[in-house]
Amino acid sequence: MQSGLEILKTVVDAHGIRFRIFRDSADGRSIEGIEDFDDGLRRQLYKNYDYHFIAHQIREECHEHCLYMGEDAFGLRYTLFWLRDTDTGAMRYITVGPYMQEGSEPDAMEVVERMGLDLYHVQILHAFYSGMGILQQFERVLLSLLNALFPLKHWTVSAIELGGLEGQSDVQLRIRDEQRVPMQIVEERYRLENRMLEAVEHGDEAGAMLVSLEMGKISMEKRSSDSLRNDKNSLLILNVLLRKAVERAGVHPWYIDELSSLLARRIEAARTGHDIMRINQEFVRRYCLLVQNYSRKGYCEIVEKSINYIELNLQEELRLGDLAAYLNVNPSYLSARFKKETGMTLTDYVNEKRIRSSLALLTTTRLPIGEVAEMVGILNENYYSRLFKKLQGMSPREYRSRMTESVLNQQKTK
Image (cartoon, rainbow, N blue to C red; front, side, top):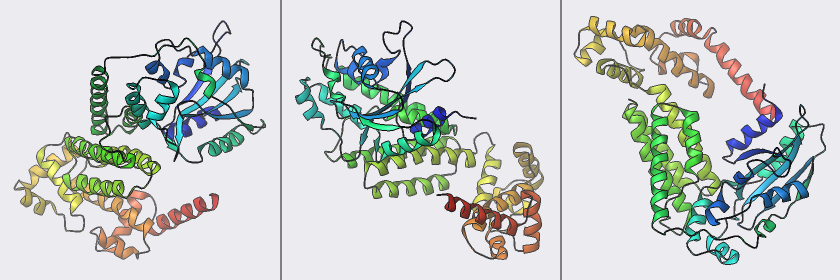
């Protein structure tokens, strides 16, 4: 069973925001790993930034059972709180961030001028800001979770002034060759894109999601002054790339086109950065599911064509002889080959696909059972019911009743 802290981390990670747990160093003078506090932003800007300055502020100004919320000089928000380890008694410093609130995205040029940075740093800040999560009411959700997961503690909320993090007088700006950084950004972007395509091609949703989070921190040059338009263009490009990845996985173009067209329409209908973030997460999940459910990779051409024909023509009669004639092969050869590669007879495969296809109709419509059966190619309602019970362990009516009851219970708990 997950601990309260693990549950909290899972929720934060799902928003695409960093959740970090820091502990005191062995000598007790600082906090281990504090250099990761800001995703390394200050390391990109300064040669000698001392992150112990941040550690000192966290230890001196923060206290147990208080949720601290604040914004730093770069316009990035953080949420901080302390929890004591129940086993060791050691203090754990939890930071959530950096992230941004919708409508308060920083102006990189203004930040550069105010902070006395070099003009070159505008590009770094643009790339960093483009990878940040943009959230609404996130801090309120976080407080509710803390109260629910750690009810024995009385949580209070306090603001923390993080602008003072830039108070070091001897910090030196980091200046690199102007041509080198764009090349590195391009190389890193292509490397991550290839990792993303490989993960999606294998239907690896967890791996693809991790790469997606990394990609969010690498941004190419913006082609438009409209931030939303830039985000939309990036997703449209990703849509094309993922189409090719699932095609290599052996997914039929009909399914690919259906999903990519749907996602393209949703991209254009997006109105906020929050919409874009949700669609981006859905991209990965939907394309991986496409591979998991419809990949034909590893099948011979005849079996691949058979499966595609079956799934695209479930309402039609699907007899072995007719399918063999369509593929211009011997029925016995097709039957043996199909059983060898799928582990099922062609008839069993067709029946399973028809029953699985009917599940959504039973759950989302009020069509009579007989009509549901006809829509998946079974003209005899009694035969459909017997087949359904054999494969699902209950009748179609029992299944519909349970699903309806489940939905109603979920609505009551909200």
